[in-house]
Amino acid sequence: MADIAYNATGKRKDSVARVTLTPGSGNITVNKRTVDDYFPRETLRMIIRMPLEVTSMSGKFDIAANVHGGGMSGQAGAIRHGIAKALLLIDGELRSPLKKEGFITRDPRNKERKKFGQKAARARFQFSKR
Image (cartoon, rainbow, N blue to C red; front, side, top):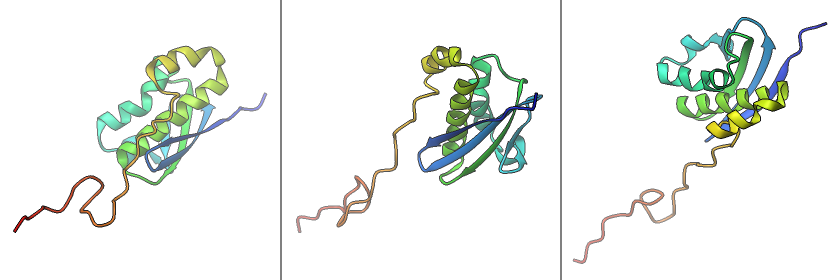
């Protein structure tokens, strides 16, 4: 039997991650670099590993993620979302623990647009009466 690859797409803010899970020893690569090399902060690496730890699948799959757009936090969240969706393809029984932790739901929060005649999305120019 050939190795089966499970593909899923994860999104968060402006980041989009294409994630591939293959049976292996638990290596995680992001844009052809190791996860430790790509994400310098330990919290971001922890965010990525969360779905695997909740489902006790860490060490069973090699993860290859291709991510673009957004910043570091958004990219880590997109990878986490993609891993969770790929785990659902592997075993549908994992849905309830992943949903309970909120890993399946795409976080809809996005940057609010800047309005014309204003400084930013909500910030205004200072009003002067005189």
